Length: 431
Ligand SMILES: Cc1cc2nc3c(=O)[nH]c(=O)nc-3n(C[C@H](O)[C@H](O)[C@H](O)COP(=O)(O)OP(=O)(O)OC[C@H]3O[C@@H](n4cnc5c(N)ncnc54)[C@H](O)[C@@H]3O)c2cc1C
Image 1 (cartoon, rainbow, N blue to C red):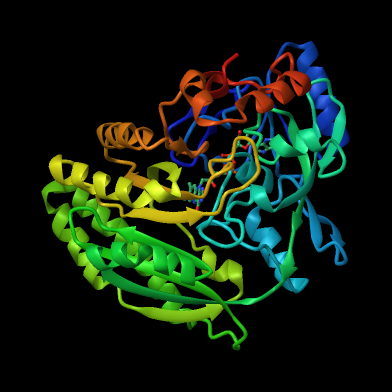
Image 2: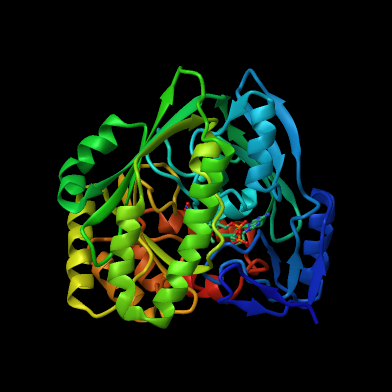
């Protein structure tokens, strides 16, 4: 029997069959065969979703053979790649072509289809999410047909399928809008809570990409400003890169968490230590080497998007809640922003947004912390990241998304028999 487990270790399933298709034709054949056997079908990514959204229950399709760039259109400035390509592979190949994506999240392990299907995002920019950088895609629908969707071909499908939650079909290839590669200058500095919040709006407006981290139980924050520059790149030395990204962010952080797990009472002091230990640094490099870094400490995460104008108040209330409880939280709260986009079920659909992300290490029970913070953020009209922990249901998500019915109508058309369903999708989208 085959076993599938996600990165966080929270979900394990035993799919009935596993196939690794090599092209759209093999995907279509697999979907038709599964349907005849009354099996559901799930193309998995790298399992980096904390929720069970990607859990295969019938036929598991692996993305590993569906990789690589298939077309570069320098006139339209789009690049097409097979859906299972890992982001780091796309980034490296784009760099070699003198091209880059506009924006991205913190890591680059995910597959293209997996990352876009849940709305993976970075911060700031003209668009923040990978889904909003899609120019077109191809997907195999519930009856095995292959359809193409972009602004002119099947535009109604394009409007929803850029963030399809794996519920509309198996995406086989994705075209992204790209731009000439540029140098991104990172300017990171510690800041105290009052100053960071007082200057947050200004910093978000004045920098191309701005984000902040708050260390719970302390006044300490880390602020990160990434700006495009015409200057020569001045990357971190290999040693400094290793010390910052591997040693401090992963190994020392793992040790700090280990100590915190044994002696939770020490966590506020450990956070104070971490907040103080971070020193200011500037460096510049190609975008993907600035935006992304490895994450090796396994954690659980919940992230909510709230309307941009409510964001800082929501953050203040979260801090008051944490101060009031005796939870001990060793991971910083990550604060990012996103401009509104035009995708039906995007967390930034139709509204400028602030993202607040909460983490707990895998050895600590996250439920009390996440549940209370989720209640608070729901009172600010919050929308949960589709790939991160939440307790929402279709009934209470529908009012949060004005274009909910549009998504469901396309789902009914492309997958009337719910070939692509699973337990999580039934909860968040309904039957
Ligand atoms: C350490 C870490 C850091 C992260 N950082 C960020 C971040 O900075 N920003 C952010 O927004 N999120 C972040 N995430 C969340 C992560 O980007 C998303 O959960 C993403 O969906 C994971 O991609 P994946 O390839 O692992 O997909 P999976 O989790 O395996 O699958 C996600 C969904 O995509 C569907 N899918 C996969 N392939 C296809 C296909 N070919 N066709 C149709 N559907 C498909 C699956 O069925 C499932 O519904 C992070 C997660 C981790 C663990």
